[in-house]
Amino acid sequence: MFTLHFRCDTLTSRDVNVFKCLVFVVPQRCTSSSGKTGICRKSFDCALRGGKAEGKCSFLNIGVCCLNDASCNHRTSFQVTTFLNRNYPSVETTALGACSLTVTPRSNTCQLRLDLHEFSLAQPNVEGVCVTDYLTVTGGSPVPRICGENAAQHIYLDVTAGTDVVVDVIMQSVNAQWNIKVTQIPCNSADKAPTGCLQYFTTTTGTISSFNFDSSATTGTFQLSDQSYGVCIEPQSGFCSITYTQTPGSEFSLTSVPGVLAPGLFPPPVVGGECTTDYIIIPGATITDTSGFIPPVPTTTDRFCGLTFPGATSSRQPYNLNFVTDGEESTAGEINNKGFQIDYTLNPCP
Image (cartoon, rainbow, N blue to C red; front, side, top):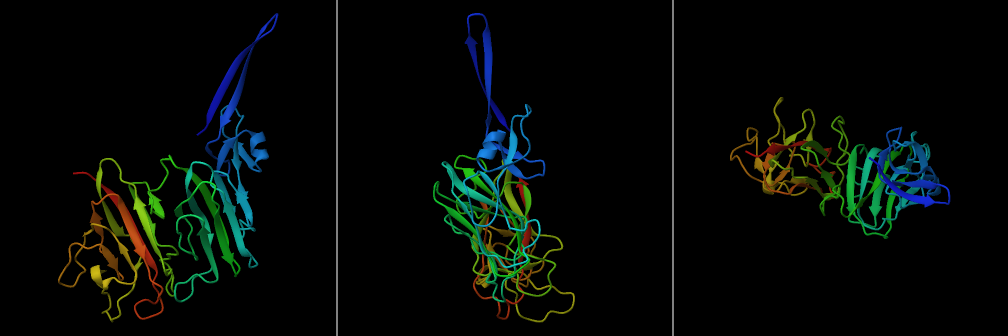
């Protein structure tokens, strides 16, 4: 999308009237010829701001899609900035130490959104702590430290105009790679997430995963420790409830229950007060599949953990899910936790 503003004047001389128009390109988001998100500007303005023009964004061909790619020790106040590792699109072959992007929120900016298009860092240690490589974000509302594989994840944080936010990647190993789009969200924007939502989904269906979730992995701790954050789903007109189900072919692993099961049997779901270390909270939830429970069978609860997710429906709005982990991942019942991946669907009103 783009907007052109015209200002026209009539210039009168002794013999002729001259009709003159000036055309202004209003800065708005655009998609470049390579598929990246930029800001539509006049080519001179893009060069003046240190941007890179990539494709047109005006039917009069007077606007260019201006990209602002940044790497280590860069500062930006652009509405959209792409933060890349130095060797991108290749991985790093040496340990960079600290690689930071400093973002100065513009006036009327209330949030930043980080889209992790590509993100591959070293895995956490056996306790689920990111110690070798990790991402931190400071200067805004709290963001947990993350590491491992997080492509396609996103993060929202509240910020204050003029107060710097530092996006910092600490890398003490090789093979790291990242491509993070940082977007400044105006206070009056429809894209702004509710306060307290680290992640925000706006479609009627979707998939929610914990950071560093990898269903294909067979051994090792992938669940990150000391996580505590909210995931929100935007209510939609004509929809009155939400249903969460375990993603087909995926796993649910939040504090396993020690014990030996017969071949072919799955552990029963663990819910309610039994979930005290790692768990998800779904306010107002009703269990949708009680077949796997050992009697007595619960029907309502707000906490879920263990190795099976039974599915849940809630009509409590605004829709949200909270994820909590403790700092212990190496004791019995905690080893090899992977986290969760669940699908959500908004249900039409009766």
